[in-house]
Amino acid sequence: MPEDDDDLPVAAGDGAEPEYLPLTDVERIAEALVFASAEPVSEAFLAERLPRGTDIGGVMRRLADAYAPRGVNLIRTGDRWAFRTAADLSFVIRKDENEAKKLSRAALEVLAIIAYHQPVTRAEIEEIRGVQTSRGTLDVLMEAGWVRFRGRRRTPGRPVTLGTTTDFLDHFGLEELRDLPGLEELKGAGLLSGRIPPGFAIPIPQDVEELAEDEDPITQLDLEELGLLTPGGEAEE
Image 1 (cartoon, one colour):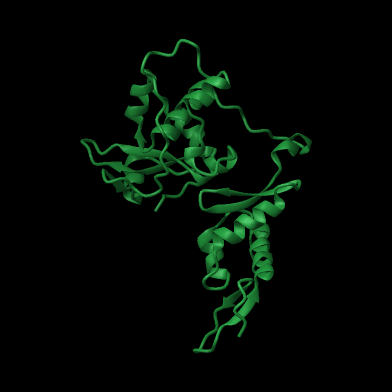
Image 2 (tube, rainbow, N blue to C red):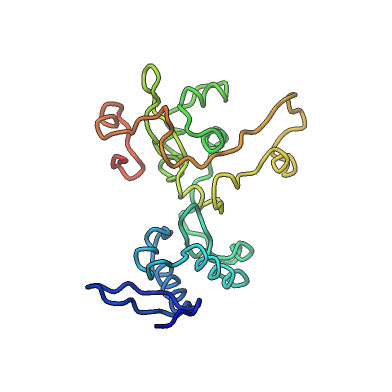
């Protein structure tokens, strides 16, 4: 049985010895799986369909390097992979006739607060902004698929906590939340005024897919009691 580093074992049932698959074939299978999917493909999904013991990250990084100079790039968003038009060629792609409505300043502020401070409650968002946040603003962000209900905070009133989604990362071309711009980057891009208060700092975003210690899962009953729905109209598990 070959033991070349370029060959990977393919699991065989009934106690039979595994067959070996060339690494190039493994990469082709991974490439086909991502290409055929309408949504970003998780590494767990790939692991179920590639030979046992495959270094999924290594395979996908090699594919990403191969596609880097091409018109279509393979990009990583969280633990998911997808093909996307190269950023420098986006101007040649025809825009949809029904172009997405631009976000209001209030929606952008709320989105930024959720991205940098998650998990965060509506009351905490309003404390940071200094003004009330309308339900419509949150609805817009949820309909876009960029914000989700995470859970309920273990404090009086058990407020709902909010966080961003994988679609948020995908839309803004981020691999993970820690890729969000920091203070110096925001200043360099002219997104912060020159009159920054002393001691002002931007929090370091944390990738917090799992519930925090002070969060409880949000249930269907919670959504029904609060009148809350996810963007698809179904309760999050």
